[in-house]
Structure formats: C-alpha cells, structure tokens
Length: 389
Image 1 (cartoon, rainbow, N blue to C red):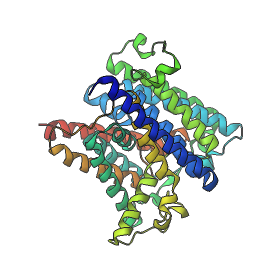
Image 2: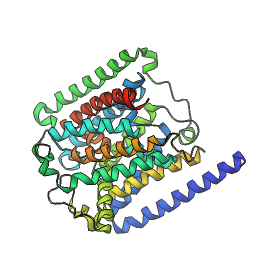
Image 3: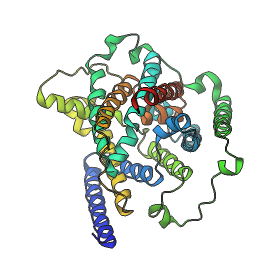
Image 4: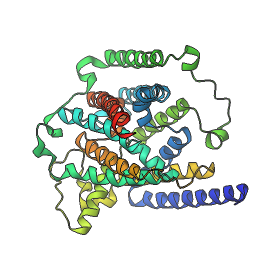
C-alpha cells in the first residue's frame, strides 16, 4: 500500500474514533458528567502517553536493566510538578486533598503489593497504564497482559480482608503534612526530588548538560504530530492534565478500580462466582456489579486506549505487533495477573497508588513506589538469569 494512502486511511480512522468518542462524551454531559470527564481526560492522557512514550515501567525498570535513568528522571519531574500543583490548589481552597486526593492506608499490603507489582511489570513489559497505551498502538501481547490484569484484579475482591494482616484495613492512613506541617513537607519534597534526580544522574554518569532537556524548538503542531516528544515534555503535559483533572473533576487519576469492576461484571454474567463487595476499600456504592458500567474510571481506561490509538494512527505508527516467541504470551499473562492482583491489594496501580498517592502527599504512595523499585530490581535479576535464556 502506498505510504500516503496508508497515512490517509490512518488519519480517517483516527478521526472517526475521535468523533465517536467525543459524541459519546457530549451525550454523557446530560446523563452523568463524571462519565464525560472519564472519556475526555482518558483521551488526553492516552494521547500524551503515546506521543512522549512515557512509561512508568521503564522508569522503574531501565535504571537497573540497561543503566538508563532518562525515564526515571522524567517521572520524578512529573511527580514534582504534580505535587506543587496539588499543594497550591489545596492551600488556596480550590480543592480539599482529604476529599479529592488519593489518600490510602499504608501497611503490609502496600509493601507486598509493591513487590508483586515490580515483579509483574518485568514479566509483562509494562505497567497498567503502559499496557493500555500499547494496546492502542497494536501490541497483541499487551492484550494478553490486559486479560491477566482483569483476572488478577478480580481475585482480591473475593475476600482480601481474610488475608489479615495483608488487608488494606490493617494499615494506617498517613497524610504527611499532618505530621510535618506544610512548610517542612514542601521543603522535604523539593530536597528528595532534587536528591533523587541527581543521584540517578550520577549513577548513569550523565553530565549536567544532558540532565537538562534542550529547548523544544518545535511548534505546537509538532507536539501533536511528528517524532515523539521529549520525556520531560510528556511529563509536563501529563502533570498539567492531572492538575486540571483534580481541579475540575474533583478526583485524582486511577485505573484499576474500573478494570476490576468490569472483571466482576464479566464473572457475574457467567454466574461462576459470587463476588465479595462489602467494605472493599477503594470501591464506592456505584462500583458493585450492577453498576460497573456506570463507573467513570472504566470509561477513563477505555478512552486512554483510544487516545493512544489516535496518537499512533495520525503519526502512522499503528500496526499489529505479535510477540516473536510463544513463551512471551505466558510471561504476559503471568505479569498481568501480578499487576492486577497487586494493584487491588495496594488499593491502586502506578496511577492511583503511586502517581496520585505521592502527589496527594500520602505516605502510601512513597512506600508503594519504593517497593515497586525493589520488586522490579529483583524481578529483573530473576528474569535475566532464569527466563531470558
């Protein structure tokens, strides 16, 4: 197929996806504005994730596997921008982090969940958001990961509280400013982000000139089309979107909530199991099986896939990509199971528990991130030594 013809067809498909999604979003304005927000913001998040190739899994994994901390430093930059933005919105009275923030208890469930999540992202080759983004790009292996995430995310809902002390109810909610005050919290956040950024750069052997991203030198059009944008620019746009989301929608970004609700709905359709919902942390009254289709986070996740697909289509980057080795499907399924199970155990994935948690000044976010890092380090060692050969 001629290159220009192929590109035109991709643009037409992308346009149809955009029109269909926006039409549905506009319809939801009169029905449930939360569903409108889910579709709208999911579309933009997916678009900029794909345009910048921003991947949380790479941020945790590459620093150990290939001694490359570019994504890790960009991830820290995004968390810093988000934290400052959330802080300013909170102290000016525009939001209340106790209501809109991602504040969850920290306990053994956070530690074990982080370790399992780290192992899972090594096997799956992605995190939860990375899986959805690559599904939109045409990676068939990531669709297998998604099946694993759905199954894994459903399992804890059967009766996670019976696994005490690993139950989310066994932990303590620690909002850092309550213990340190806002002044010291912000000072410590700035010091920690700068220290980690420099530490990673020294570990890599990167010069100061390379640490600071070059001037973009590109028009807004080139941010939307053309070569992938710098990780730092992707981090900035994603952080800005997250700030807009909490200000307008009144909540932080998350994913696993909608995916596990969809999984439970499927189980209910086949009448295989009786789901356990009572007192499940992170679930609201609308998230029971009968209301799974009204969960805005499900629409957010679907729109993220579509946003990534649109970005890849308009840049002629979409194509079906099949794993080269059949064993990869098994790794993908296993990694997805770990990602889904650990996300529900920790009451959130890399979006809800890590990104939103740290930005909301919840200690749980830092602990979860630390143990994802440890889990990915250990998982990478095992993967290289026993599985890759």
